[in-house]
Amino acid sequence: MVTTTRRSFLKTSALGAAGAVASPYLVGGVRAAAPIDVGVLFSLTGGMSIIETSLKDATLLAVSEINAKGGVLGRQINPIIEDGATDPKTFSERASKLAIQDKTETIFGLYVSATRKAVLPVIEKRNKLLFYPTFYEGYECSRNVIYTGAVVNQIVWNAVPWIVEKLGKKKFFIVGSNFLYSRETSKVTKSRIKQAGAQWIADEYLEFGSAEAASLVNKIKESGADVVFSNIVGSSVIAFYREYRNQGLTQDKLPIFSTVTTEIEIAALGPEFSAGSYTSLPYFQAIDSDANKSFVERYRAFVKDPKAVTHQPVESSYFQVYLWKQAVEKAGSFQADAVREAVRGQEFDAPDGRVRVDPENLHTWFTPRIAQWQPDGQGKIVDAAPAPVRPLPYAAYGETDDNLFCTPHGLDQKKLKS
Image (tube, rainbow, N blue to C red; front, side):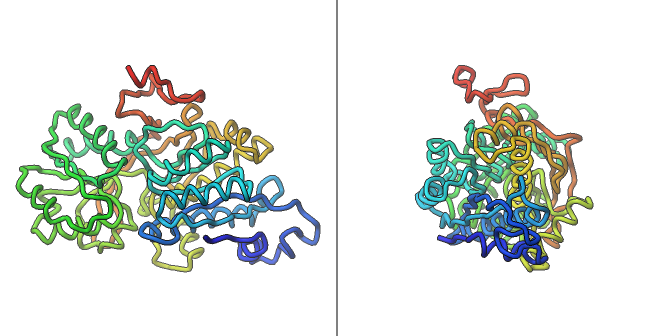
């Protein structure tokens, strides 16, 4: 377990560094309102800690910037940091602690779907809010979660037609990790492949966290596929890409196209193993805008690492704190019910561009992009949608822009069943 106190965090925030806070309760020598506690819940130990620590850092960067500008409703933000330790049970226990003992109304955090599913009953029972920053499989409609990661229609729908039309590939071999995200994403992918006039010839799954990819790569070699569509996550990404090259497969002839491989996985596996492959996500560090360049510089300065990489969940972890701030200010309250209603329709100029919380389903509008990975470990953006795309968490089950399953009143079960 890792916690912060009001004093320890505020002393290290940008405001504290500037000398503007004489104590946690004094601003410019004048007694101020007590700080507002929020939960920050990520894996800081265990197998997912490399990725999730970066999400914690991005969250704290946003908190520090907001505190430096006066906080929210005149109150400084005090993050209470907890370690989920890459374990769903621990995540549930830490969420309970934040909700009951610390009485936080809002939690920022989580990465993999298994931990979100473990925490969901806690926040729904206690009527708290979770801001969840990771792209995910959809198939969820909770009034207690603000989903600031992309869903599969914002990742797959643009990708498959692009592969067919621009790369001329029509025989898809789908690979993934054996867990919820990969299997649900495969459903959408198969439907989209059919719509694009192509075919999927196989789908295979590695056990979550497996480092044994030789058999899978051999199946790909013998399949006759001309493109690999990958939903493999975590440490298995490293094993898969390295084994791919070890067995003589090349990205120019049989490219890997991923929905999950980001800058942080590329850095871990070595860019020489991924150069020439592709990823579809709304955010890449290579986005050429002043806003993104500034974000990358500020993030690196905050973590004190001039080579640190930003990636999609890092960006979402950062901007979701600002969406919360805007909603709190609109509501004039920190209470979950008030913030939930106020966050509907909130917009923010994020590093990837304008994002918006959908007022119906509390998911986020994004601009889909495709990047090809370069030898330096950065993505070259080769395609971008002309405008943000509405999130459809039930796209695999027939949800469309004009036939929404997830509404402010919850999931429309009749539409789902039909």
